[in-house]
Length: 298
Length: 270
Image (tube, rainbow over all chains, first blue to last red; front, side, top):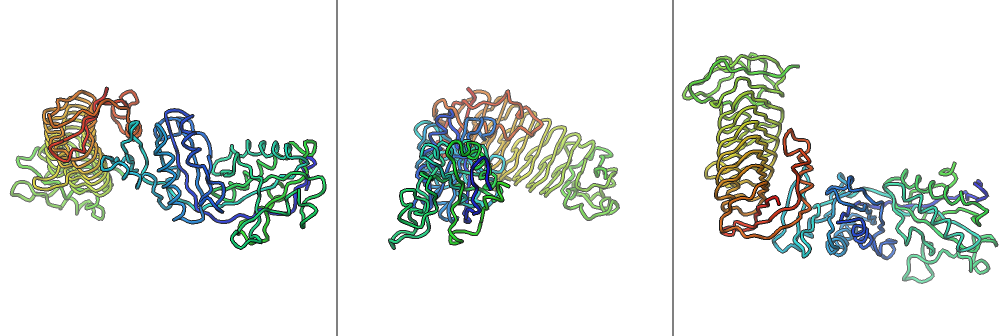
C-alpha cells in the first residue's frame, strides 16, 4: 500500500491489555490546571521503568468540569489494578494535592473504584470534611492555600496499551516534523494518550536484551546507524525513525488514533522525506491485540 | 394506569395512622383488599373505605387528597414509588423512608422525615419541629436523601442528622442542626437561636448572617470549591435552590460547636 508516496508496511502493531483510569484536574485557571496535570503525568512514559504510562488527554472547558473551573483530563495506564491504584494515589498526593488551587475529580464513573482522595484525606489530620453530593463522595482537605477538594474514587476500566506506528524518513528533522503533525491530529481524539515526551519516542525498544538484567533494549533493526551491523529493517535512504505509542480505552479508539496519525504523516508525503510507515511487531511475544496498518488505512 | 387516589371523606376526630398505605405494602393488593385494610384511629380500627373514597389502580403512584394534619405516618418506611399529598400532612411524614418520593402541597407536622434513610421529600408549605431528626432517645436522625421545604421549619431541624441534605427556602427555628453528626442543612431565610447546638460535624449553609453561640469560632472568609458542585446537584429540584442566581461560593466560615467535637461548620454567604 502506498499513500502519497509513503509505503505502508504489511505489518501490525502489537498491543497488550492494561488497566486504565481517567482523572480531571481543575484549577483557578488553565495554566495551573495544566501545570498540575503535567506534574501528575510526568515520568510516566513506559511501564518498563515508570510503573505506569500516563498523559494528558485534553484541555477541558469550564462548562465540562465538575466545579466549573478550567480543567485538564489525564489518563493513567498500568499493567494491573494494584499498580494502577498505587500510581494514582502517589501521583495525586505528590503532584495535585501540592499544586496551588487544584481540585481532583473522577473521569470515569463506572468500573472498579480506585482511590483518589479516599486516602489523601488523612493528610487533613482529622480536619478533613467529607461531603456526599449527588451520590458521589468528596473530601475537603484543608491546605495552606484554602481547601483541596478531591473526589473519593475514580473508575478503573480494562484498556489497551502499546498501539504504535513508526515513521521512517530521509532525515531526522523530517521524521520529527511528520510525527509532530501526527500528534497534533491524534490529540483531537478522546480516550487515548501518547505517553512519550511530546507524544513521540525516538528510542523504540525490542523485547529482551543481551544483558540479563534488562527486559527491553534498543530496536536495532530500526536504528539507522546500525544498518551495516545488524539485521536491519531499513533501506539505505532512511536516516531517521521515530515512533508514536498510543494507549487507549478500546481497540477502536487506538485504531482511530493510528489512522489520524498515519494520515497526517502521509499528507506530508514522500516530498517531505517520509518514506515508510511501519509498526512495532515483535512476533506475538508482546500482546494479543494486533493493529494491522494496511487494514487501518484501507 | 391512573394513580391510586385516596380522597378523605371527612376530617377525622382522632389522629389516623396512615402507615399501611405505602406503595410497597399495596403492590400486590386488589382495590377491594386495599379498601378492607384497617387504619388505627385513636382506639378504633377503621377500614380504609370508611375514611377515604378510592380511585385509580397504580399502587406505585399514590395520591392522598383533602389531606389534613391528623393523618400521621404518611409514607412510613416508603421503599420506592411516589406519594403526593394534597393538603396538610400530620406528624411523622416519611418516617424512616428508604427510597421513593413524597410531595406535600401543604404543611407537614412534627418529625417529618424522621430517621429518613434515602429518597426525596418535598413540603410546599411549612414543616414542624424535629424535621429530619431522630426519635427521642435515638442517636441517628436522617441518614440520607434530600428534604426540601419551601416554607419555614420549626425547632430542632436536623437534630442528630447523620447524612443527606435538608433544604429550607424559608426560616428555621431555634436549635437548627442541633447535635448533627454530618450532612448539610441549607437555610435561605433566617435562623433562630442556638444554631448548630452541640453539632459534631456537618454543614449549615446560610444565606443570612446567623446569631451564633460563643462556642462557634470564626475561621474567616473563604471561597470553597465544593459549593458550586453542591449547588449544581440542586439543579433538578423544583425550587429556588435550583436557580443559578442564588448560588455562591464565597462564605464566612465558623467552626463549632466547640463544646462538642467542633468539626462542624456554619457557612454564611458573603
